[in-house]
Amino acid sequence: MMAPPRSLKNQLRLWLLLTMLVVLGISAAISYSRALHYATQAYDQALLRTVLALSDEVIVDEHNQVKIELPEIASHLLSYNEGDHIYIRITAPDGKLVFGEAHLPLPSHPVIGNQEVYYNSTYKDEPIRVVTFALPVSPDANARNILISMAETTAKRDAMVAEMVEEMLLPQVLMMILAAIVIELGIFFALKPMQDLKDALHERSHRDLSSLDTDSTPLELQPLVQAMNALLSRVKAGLQQQQQFIADASHQLRTPIAGLQAQAELALRSDPPESVKEPLNFILRSTTRLSHLIQRLLSMARTDAATTQLKFQPVSLTDIIYEECARWIGPASDKGLELEVLIETQQDHVWGDALMLSEMLNNLLENAVLYTPTQGLVQIRLWHAGKHVFLQVMDSGIGIPPEHKALIFERFHRLNPNQGNGCGLGLAIVAEVAEHHNATITLSTGLEHPVTHDTGSQFTVKFTCYDTLPQNTRAASTDPK
Image (cartoon, rainbow, N blue to C red; front, top):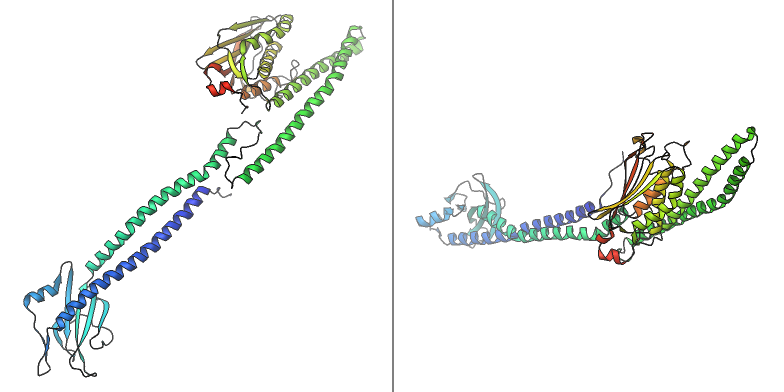
């Protein structure tokens, strides 16, 4: 099972946000460490000052008995401080308790005279911070000391540390949020050229092989765009060679096929024996069909080649209708068909290439005349509604079965390969011309034949009216999409 494709945006977000979180974590650790250091230092100094004040109240009498005289109010003040509890322990040199809490933890190692030691411990299930001061009884270096210990619960310290960390981290968190927003915007705008490139390729027709614009492409994307342009150039050259080959082959085949067709017709007019008449008829039908195919291949080659050199300008669909009807009035009359033209609008101009639009209508009319039986009707109608102009060719021919409607515009698709001289390219050319003009073509039910009662076909091409186009489109020609 293949892994899902990775997103560059998500990878950038992940790495940048992880980096920011790591930096924020390191900053939080450093902030907590410094806040704890300064809070501990401040409260330790306050404890030490209180202990030194207590040491001034310690008295050693003539019997070497250690006493301390504290007023009752001072005792209450020392035992309780707002938000914290204060615990005191004064121990004589012989280890006897003189004052305070008998079970208050003492330092784990001896304290030198006139020195203090700080340590953390637990008392009455509460964390405490303790300072112990060694008060010497005599100047003798070997004399034991009076230990004055004062402990304080850590509520105020913790609150102060939390407040200091919050004060230091809050601006950093806000800066991180702002940085995340800036990073998201930076990722969006930095990768927008890739989105623009994707949109430009997505909106292109499969026949538009022109080079991509490299002027506005970021430096990092230029090798990719240049490689794509080189690929498009190679594909375009290959297609041009293919189109040229089809055109050259069609030109080369047209003359001998026309000669073979003329010879078959001449042979049939000379009243040949019955044994060769049927083969000659078969040759004539085959050459006629082959001649039609060659003509359609030439038309297809011209249509494909014209996509790179279209000359868009305002074109009157009325003029094109009359020109093409003049070409087909004769064949329609010879077949006993009625050709009807309905021009129902004066807003008949569209933005397009006149030659390709004529080719499109010519193929629609040929398709209608070819597949409409005698006494049938071929109707060409032009009207507009809102911002659109509609060109419609409707006939009372044999119609198109529903199962073929989805395939009718594909190349070389025929309803019945054994019927008529068609080659399956006419409607494919119609669809390509409509696509190049940003028009849509729909197929629906046509007219009913008065004799066969078959229901014909109706092809409707919807164009954008030239009068409703923006001024910049009306002022200059446009390359096809």
